[in-house]
Length: 171
Image (cartoon, rainbow, N blue to C red; front, side, top):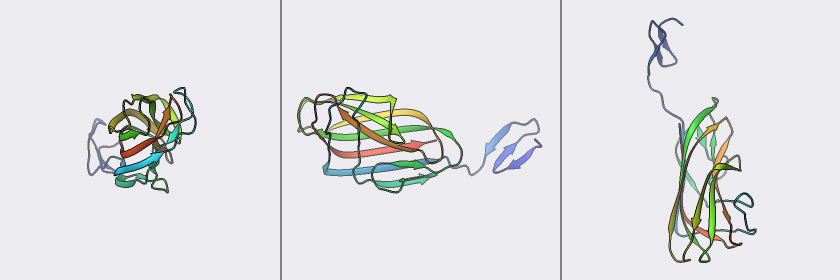
C-alpha cells in the first residue's frame, strides 16, 4: 500500500499505521434506576445451567455509537456495526431478593443465549438488603448481535427485585 491517508488512517512509507484520526470506538450503554425496583419473575428452579430469565426492566439508552436498544427498552444492546469485533462487556446490577437465603446465578447473554463463561454466583442473606453484582467479559460481536443480562435461582422459584442495572459494551 502506498503511503498516505485512507479512511482517516495514516500509513507510513514502510506500511505501518501511525494514527487513526477522528476514530470513535463503538460503544453502547443501557441503564435503569428505581428505588422501588422491578420484580423479575422466576418460575423454575435452575441447576446453574438452565432456566435463566431475562433481566428486563424499562431501560434507557445512552452513549450509543454503532449500538441501539434492539427495538425495545428492555435491557438489550444491539450491535449495528458491519465489522465483527471484540468488545469489553461490563454490567452492574443492584438487586433485592424477594426471599432470604437464595442463591442466584447472573450471566451475560448474547442473542438471548447465556454465555457459559460469563456467570457469577450471588448468595442472598436477607430480603431487605440491596446488593450489587458485577459481570465483566470480552466477547466477539457481529452485526445484529444483542447483549443482555439473565438470572436464575438455584434454590427455588423465588423472584428478585432489580433496583438498578447498567450494561456497557465498549470496543
